Length: 64
Image 1 (cartoon, helix red, strand yellow):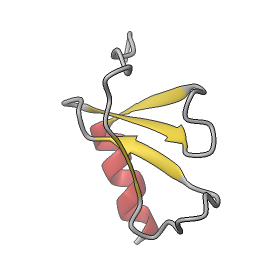
Image 2: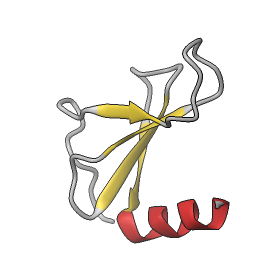
Image 3: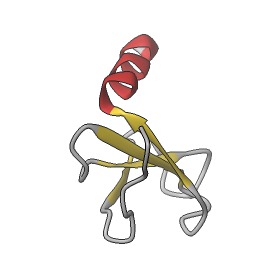
Image 4: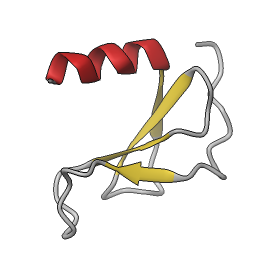
């Protein structure tokens, strides 16, 4: 991907497997067609990476 989407209005969610005390977790946003922004839940103001949706899908499938 050549550019990153504007993420200031992204609605972030964490995995249903995450615990509520801020452990090792990532958050993703479903707001952007074709890409999946990913960030560290412990550093919400920090950087996010943006991966193509097909690559994210393959990654998640490989974990199952």
